[in-house]
Length: 557
Image (cartoon, rainbow, N blue to C red; front, side):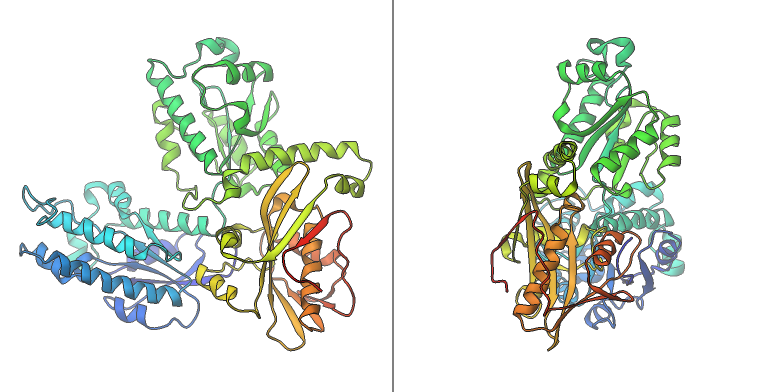
């Protein structure tokens, strides 16, 4: 995972040594893991961390609420007091969230073996009902604290089955769960952390025959495909397409890589009455008899998307193996032979970030289709400069405001390729910057004759030094790279520094595995390089590119 490697402290009222060891054994772990002293949750969360750490806070509800503890001992609890105890815990977590980069918080669970009679779910007296109310109350209290991420521990217990709880480990080491629970918890934690740092799946490349529909369209004809109707397999394929359609509406793009006659496949997509997905739902199609690995690679190049953001689904194990070998960064999940399990398999994959959706997310397919038209227009021009002028690009720059806050925060969290440092600002940190005139943040929107790309760029400055401005953030979506937007952002940065009376501008490039496009800009920019620091004397004007129009919603020198 990209960005600054941080500490992850495990805070709990039970023994998390086994969980820590499982995490440390993961090759994709983005943290240094340490374990807080056992059963010192309040102390561990109250003491400010020495560095910007994240915390995984796993508690038992009976240690948070004495009223719930009484209920477990078959004594009548006071629900209002229990909720007040939850309020106190929520206050502690919210204070801790201000000191930590992120908090990860599993939901509370009661042991499945605990029975409390016919009224255990009664709202007024039921023990299990009380726990549900406590957990919901905590969720409501924490709603809006964006760096607290709740994790669904029910799934971990279901995964482990009847062996989820371990009485033997509890009495020996104060470890209540089996390693199967900890393994499932590690999977979810790493998946959520990956999504928060921009590693969610953004593109699904799909086969057609026996993947998106049942049957071989070239042999059976589109009229005889298994799709919908009173047919178990047909219904399962429709459910899969509905799920894919929903993901597409949430910003996950869809593409096709199929060995078929193109005209035959497109006829099925257009004419079959049970098709949920239509041609307009796909941002790219490779329907031919060429190698699928090469076709998937071609789609990735066309869309200018990172391979780690791509998933390939195919019923054929040979094709899956080929794509894994050819494109090792692409996610190729094992696919069940039982077609009735397709939809469940897709929905079980912890690779989609669906927590937030910006306007740009919902329009992602439209944006990439516009980009395809833009690229095709390149052939009509003899040189790049003329082509760029023909686009009629307009870049609008303005200071960060509440209306754009969610999208800017999302870009900081998910942009890896053109990102000066890949630092992930928390919402609180970003809010603080909005209130600090010495650390301005500017957002950039891009549009041209093919469409509106939306808010795609961020520029952050630090003006605290008397003689210089430091570019703290230079972030740009890959879909507008190469259109002089990045040079325009440098122009704005230097102009703002000059307006603030600074003698020079500095940019400190922090190299990661993926942000070389940002280095490429700095190398060709004309800024003077010393190691990974680039400088510009503000006495010299940094010219705005002449191939686009810059609109400033704020002063500029």
